[in-house]
Length: 300
Length: 265
Image (cartoon, rainbow over all chains, first blue to last red; front, side, top):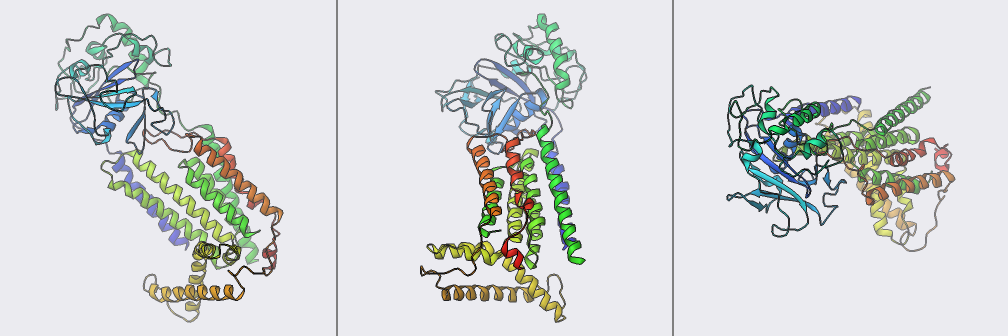
């Protein structure tokens, strides 16, 4: 019996070993990007998200924006519904806990406007050059829910979608613009990322260029039509310095319009978790002791 | 201890287990089941049912996790969530396994109330089928070994299954006859040596009710620590009250044993 227990444990370990690489295997190839607009009602955040050569669904786009740009999010219902974006939304496990307010999903239509997505974000394919928008508000249909502000792909990602560009040292792509009016310290964090959210116009390419990174990019000089943020450059770089260490190191962080600060996403297990594990260990040890004592009594 | 108290204990443990997928609640509960099994488990062939349920629990985790492979796109969050749901089922099974080793399967049958005789009989038969089958397997195997029948892993399965099923049938028929003979279901029945509800049973029941109360109020209070946020994966919160409620369930292990059924054995 003990042998069988051991072999079944071995089975668990083997299965875990097989599943882990499948689960974590990232898609890392030629870059292409899609634009993501998050409109909390008061603030708008835009993210140029690298898709890594493959098409993703609307939920994965948010996850990538999270890992590439530190967008804070929380999903529910098996990862199919959006509970919270940029610290706005339901904080519990019920994504519609704030109903009638909820995150509406919009997609760009051919005429440069928004159309209400009739299907869930997890069933929507997002490809290079697409724009996805999330807006916080009431209303169950496209006619009553407020759409995000009109956004063009170029205003978010800088250049037309350019798949399969060679990586260039020079300018990381993913210029990230923040096309809202200054809102004065959006979100809770007073410094760092909080300021970045409030910068009035696009950090744009220039500022990105200050960081040598090897992700794919547009032209070497990066002069873009919407690049009117020269005056902001200094401030933005300062923000950038603050926010960089917290962003994911493996991806080229575009600039950082990072709602509520790009704080580390995972603060580590809470202290009570260690208490729980300690209790588990203590009880398990006690049980083992009892079993051993009983066995000794039976034998003796 | 009174069989009813054990029933309540198992019910509470199972209910707490199914309210949560937080591993920091489930693992202590698993340890609680283990400690109660270790402290109060009755000697005899059904003692191995804990281990068997533990193995089934491990298989459950594997199966639930493997189901992720059918998803259109597999993310780490899906795998973690599936594994935690598997762990929840495994803990539920383990609690039931511990219950099987500490309770007396035929004592449970005796608990069935007179009024709702038939459903209660069916329920108590279903509750005790696992330990009774495990005990029957052990008996048959021992008999085979004594007769020099070689026990190979899979070959011996038919030779094992037939007598085990037969034993189950015989037991059921015997039980029905004996209950009939005692006037069960006719409204008049005297209990032979009724079990005593001692103070231990009261304490265990109170602990069980408290634990269920905490878990259910957390469930309806939308306590975020019960669930696991797997998209993205973040460490779940752990509420000390809930943890305390779970540890309270280990109380049968701390109480002195002096139940009449135990002494008579």
